[in-house]
Amino acid sequence: MEEFIRLLAELLSVPLTEFAAIIMGVIVWIFVLFFDLFFENIANSEKEQDIFSKVIYSQKFKTSLWFLKKAALLGLIFIVITLSIINFVFFDPAMRKIADIVSKRTGIKIEFASVSGNIFTGHINFADMKVIQTKENKTNFDLAFKNAEIDLDMLSLLLRPIVFEKINISDVSGNIKQQDKVTSPQDNKKLLNLNLGKLDITLKKKSDKDTESQNTQNQPKREFIINNLVFRNINVSFIKGTNLPINISLENIISQSFRSNYAIFDIFFRSNINGSIDGHKIAISNKESGWGEKARWEVENLPVRTVSYFLDKTPINWFQDGVIDIVAEDEWQRKTPEINMDWQLKMHNVHMAVPENIGSLEKIAVLPVANYINSHNEGINLQLKFTTNEKQFEGAASLDAAGLWDALVSGTRKSIAKNVVTQAP
Image (tube, rainbow, N blue to C red):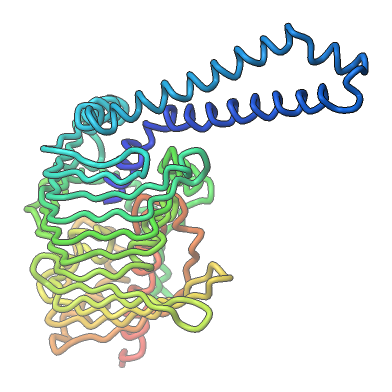
C-alpha cells in the first residue's frame, strides 16, 4: 500500500513544471507591470525634469518594458491556453503519457481504463487501475483498484512536503509476493545470545549504522502528507517465498494525517483497520487520549503457523499447531517520541518443536521452555511491557525494520523463561 501511495505521488507531481511555469509567468507579469507603473509615477512627479528620471524613463527604456510586459503576458496566456486544452480535451491521453514516464522511472507498470479530473484543482479519478511491479524486487506486486480518487493541493507541489487533501481507494485485489530472507548459519548464531543462568534469550540489536543505512535507503524521494487516506474492500493474496498464499481481507483502512516518512507508524499506530488475516479477525483502532494518542490491536484465534509465516524469527518459527489471541495497547504523548506498549498474549494448544540441528548448549536452555509450553495445552498467558520510540519508524519499510518484532520476540522469550523459572520445582 505504501508503495502505491508513493507511486501516486510520483504520478501526480509530474505536472510540477507546467504549474510552476504558470506561477512564474504571473510573477513576471506582475513585476513588469509594477516596474512600469513605478517609473511612470517617477516621470510624472514634480521631479519630472530631474536628470535621473529622464535617463531611467527614456524612450528606449519604455520600449523595452513594453516588449517585456507583452512577452510575459503572451507567455502566460499561451501556458494557460495550452494547459486548458490538455485539461479539457486531452486529459486522458496526457495522463497516460505521464503514466508511461513514471513507469519507466520506477519500474512499475501503470494501467487504467479511464481517468477524469482537473489539473488546476488537483482532483483526479482513476477507474479500473492496475499497478504491476515489472522489475524484480524483494517485494513484487500485481494489484488492481476499481476506483482511486485523489485530491492534491497543487500549491504544495512548489513546496515540501506535497499535500494530498484526500486519497480514497476502493475494491483492491491482486497478489503480493515477498522473497524469503536468506540467512546463513553464522547469522543464526548471532541472533541467539543465551544466558543459561537466567534462562534469558535475547536478540542481537541492530547497530545505529545499520539502522541509519536502512532508513536512508527506504526514504521516499519526495515526502508527502495525506490528510485523509481511505482504503475500502481490500482482498489480496500474500505469498512469502515458496509458502502457500495467505488471504488478507480488510474492510477498511482509515488514516488521518498520513506521513510518507512515517508510513509504517501511521498505518499501524495512527489508523483504524478492520478485517481478517487468513480468515481470522484483526482490528486496529486509534483514538485521542488526553494529550496523546492510544492504539489498540486485537487479533483472535490466529494460528501460530500464520504468525511464523510473517514473523520468521526464533523461537516463533518453532511453534507448531495451536492458536494465539493478541490484545495490545500502545500509548504515547504527542510531545514525546516514547511509546509505552502493553501486550497480552494468550496461547491455546500450542506445540513447540525444537530443531535437531541446534547446538547442545542451545538445547539445554530451550528444552525446559519447550516442555513448559507443550505441557500447558489449557493455555498460556503472557504479559509483555516494553517501550519503543516513534523515531525508530522514520523511513522504515516494515515493522521488522523498525525493530518492533525484535522487541516483541525478546519480550516473549523473557516472559516464557520467567514462567519456567517460577514453576520449576
